[in-house]
Amino acid sequence: MITNSPFKLLRRKIAWTLAVVLSFGLTSLAQPAVKPQAITTSRRASEQKTATYFESIRKSPPKQLAFLLKMPKGADLHNHLSGSIYAERYVEWAAEKGLCVNNRTKALVVPASPSKCETDQTPANTALTNSVLYRQMIDAWSMRNWQLSGQSGHDQFFDAFGKFGPATYNNSGRMLAEAVKSAARGRVSYVELMLTPDGTATGVASSQIGQQVGWDGNFENTLSKLKANGIEKAAAIGIENLRAMEADKNQLLKCGTPHADAACSVTIRYVAQVSRNSSLGQVYAQIVTGLALANDPNSKVVATNLVQGEDGVNSMQNFSLHMQMLKFLRPLYPRAKVTLHAGELAPGLVPPDGLKFHIRESVMVAGAQRIGHGVDIMHETEPFELLKEMARRNVMVEICLSSNDLILGISGSQHPLATYLEYGVPVALATDDEGVARSEISREFLKAAEEQGVNYLQLKTMARNSLHYAFIAGESLWSDGRKFVSVAQCARDVEEMKLTTNSCRQFVAANEKARLQWQLEEDFNAFERAW
Image (cartoon, rainbow, N blue to C red; front, side):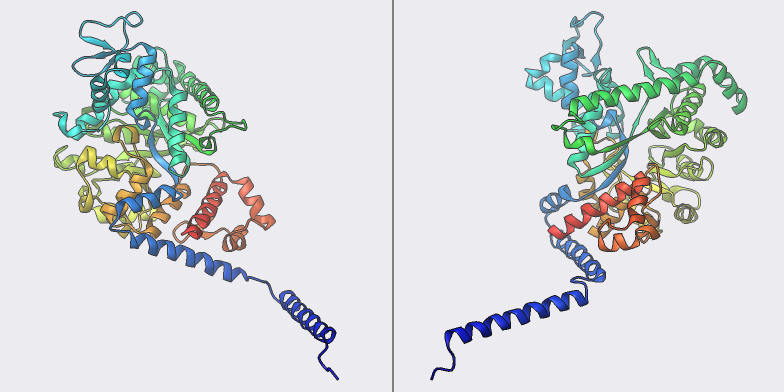
């Protein structure tokens, strides 16, 4: 008699399999497959493994750069549009326009009649077939090989803008397209671009009105005169210029079509720049226009900023008065934000007294919400108290490492980045003028790692800071921007990294800043899991 027939064995196998399946099913029903805390722990583990890997390649800058090229970076908040374009593009556009090149200075010249250059000039299109002229123009219009120019880095940098200037005329849309393509390549999702919005064929509208009105020493009287002379028209010109520029950019990048460039997804806002080395009447009029644009809900201008060399004669003589102008005008334009170039100075560039007050007055008098550069912070009067006040007020510093190195000769341990971090002042990395500097946002991150010893978690914090302190509409995803604690509506969603609750979906949909921050967190989650 056979006790274990094939049929009995088959029945036992089926019964055992069913028992296992049912047991697994009941266990699955009794508790979640993965608890939210387990997901959080997994995210923390991915973050830590990514940080550990970054430390393991410290001695290999090429590997670090490959890593950083893929790292999400949030926002670039200190970016001059005209300086963001590489000289190669300007050479092409100058050739198209039939411009001429001064044989000695390599500065572009608009000819009196098309393509008719003077005897001391060469047609710009010659550079497209003459490699010597081509490289000479690129060197003159950027910081490439600046050590051979016979000038300081400071002078080579600021002189470059005047040389390629005519190539920018009527090319704003192209410039914008180039800027956002660079941002997209660098994994940047949001940019604030500095520009002069109210330019016309005859000059800057606000500056022309300001020159006509002048400066009588009285804030209120001068403002009344500006209004009587139609200063509001300058803001209207600015809005129309920006709309036309974006339309050109959208066409060039095929935005809104199935063939849209990845750069179309980059969110753009603008900072109206003021030429601080102009006359007082012109500076005041430009500030009025910049604040008016930033106060207008229909404008994509979010702030104003004073630009040009901080060591210029008018800037040094009138700096305190410029801050008083901002202090008077800001309450009249409550929606407008202010970020200021301050402390872009170094010992020897100006007398010692000139290093003592620019950051302090920008923060304490003008009420700047962000500071660009801030290099001379330790030369300020009572620097430690100022650092503590900046931390208390959450005044973020836009750190531009390549620019500070090339223009001021400040790098490595001489740079105050470590001090800002030590005192809890929020910071974010930015490009400043990546085309002129021959840099890009990923190389700014690399410079922070190489020269400043910044680790991955600090770089991640800087990327988060860039969106948290951006001048973009809506509330932040973070109720605590220091520890990155989410708002109550999104606590569960951030923990699980899934946008599932109605409260968080509604919050993110209603706040553009939170939407960009959520996207950054998703990008970080995917990036860290890959490592």
